Image (cartoon, rainbow, N blue to C red; front, side, top):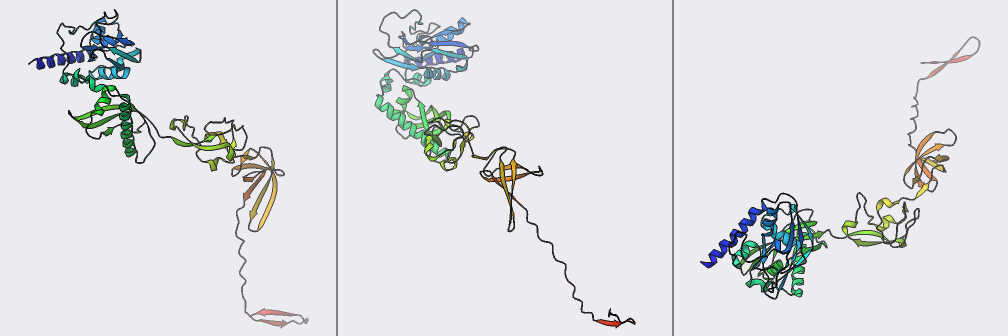
Length: 408
């Protein structure tokens, strides 16, 4: 009967907290303290933070929201900003309406009987309505998303084991991302795990399975880690920062001046972070062979990634140069001279002005001050067919002695 009463009290606390959250409409400043020692069995938001709001009632209501059980005597707990936000979000608080400032981590120490600082709201073990709050039992802790007092010792996972759990989780998430991407890639995974989440993973009796996330699988992702434990099936939401796999890019190993031709000794292929691959619409060069022989359009410092818009094919024809233009048709090759109207690199078209007639035409650059025009070969006109005439001709003799032929 006592257990049922305690459960009902804690449920009432949670329900009252959910009612409070519906009134959070204006932005509220939540300034986290560095260290607190709350009195009572429950740590509330008002214990760990100074709440500043124009609405005094809203301030009191937010301050009474329960976060976790108080630490056991002689122990301390560390609450990060993200953990506090998750605890409030689980109770329906609109985190977007709260502005968290102050410390990034709050040390929650067990009360030693000394008087708490005046700026800390006293938690005497009674609710705001005067109801007595009993220490949380296991069921209440599950509803609150925190550990029970008897289970606090289970949260004490040594640092070595905690590192192992983090590494195992990274591998699980990485394998899941490889499956979704369809190929094995060296993803960079940074999981945001609290002590409570590490303790839950440590108690897993089966291999955790990852699900969730969304394309493009980078940035802050929310995954759902499922596994079995002594208490049954567990589904643990885990947030992780996913960086895309590193990519190959050409990096200058010595300074390259503007107008210099890129040589093999100037560059090398390295693997760089994917977020360095492009800046806006810029793309990094990824082929040493294609880059050698190109001309730098601007100065490139040693250690910088070489972008494709920083190089160009070397200019071999400049504006105003008198160049040689050749044309070949059949077995006949004709060479003439003309003036280039603009700069051009090998393989590009350049407009040429004839030195004599001033006629302009396009030619393709094939080398330094050399271009060519491909003439269109025209077939020679067909010769007229000779008629074969086998008609006999008889000579005729005239009176004056001359002769002529008559066609019969």
